[in-house]
Length: 458
Image 1 (tube, helix red, strand yellow):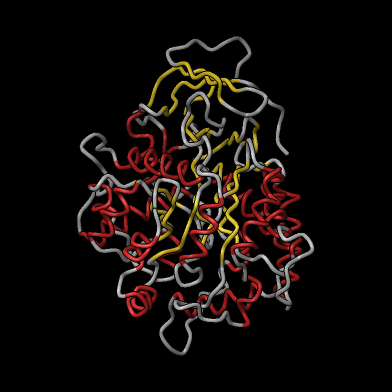
Image 2 (image 1 turned 90 degrees about the vertical axis):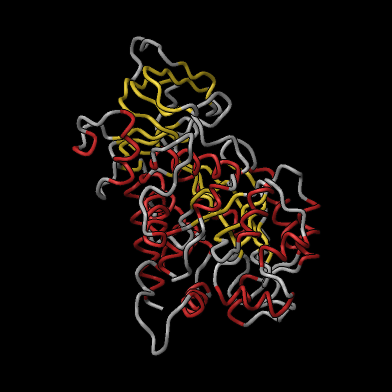
């Protein structure tokens, strides 16, 4: 889907890796890769001239099917609610989704993500089996459906088939409601192999051990060693205090400590959440080059806690953001609440900054771009030759940008009101959003509404 390949555009102001630059000509090839980025240029005749252009954000953690749960779990139970009570509701919901419904839900989500400024997504995909718990005739059936939704929407995709064998530490047997998630190392490698022909351009394929409680160390090693060295690996870790206690009871070590003791963790890894970590674990993560995958709106929605961002930044750590359960589809909201959570916890302002970058908006956007691109395992996250032609055009007519100095644009985007300032979105060299609307928005939304009606009638 998408508009005709335009080949180039001209930006009065563009956010390059070295910061904002004026009069920038961006050119890309038929494959959707940037071939030249020239500042202090003149606009060629007939080329579209835009005011503010910045790289599209990477959504480094997504469970697409959970988009259809939005708003349905915000009811208090008889006792204290937590991640674990939410998980029970999610399990019941997941039991009934068909592959076609999964594709429809994912297409709606991805169109929304594009409209808000995400141009790539890492899909942590664990709903692999049919309703009876059997593998489909095509083991990659559901992953292929999510990839089809990505193609329909035009978003870039890193597909991460999930290794999910146990219900808890010590290889506890899966529960009945987890039957659709069950995979072993051989299953995951078969799915990865089946998806290999789709790699390239807009698609990468890695893998994800669900968590240390759901995947054994020997299994993780087996799959990691079988994958080519450049493929990304993501894992949920230390998301809740209950998980930390269970890991301590099982191994005598906290989750990040246990992972680093058992596995060679390097820059191909993304440690999702890592909410409850101690100073030695922060140092381990930063030194290894792994990305911390932070999902502030979901972590707040589930009552998980706050990642020690300031300490991680000080240690030279890399991070990115994801929408996870999709209570929000906005990178602006994730980055805003990443900063605001730190301000509330530390009772101070302007936490996410360094000696080299004092502007919080600029630091957050650029750091999350770099971490997200690394986690995606693709050439993303920058307006630079060799990267994908993924970019956002801001609404320069919006009052929030009226008269704003270029140095304050990202601060205004992140911290000035709740209006969406993304007007147009180019992804892989094709326009997928124009004037705030996705090019297939009506058709995708109509199919999604039919799917919701089916699921909510159960």
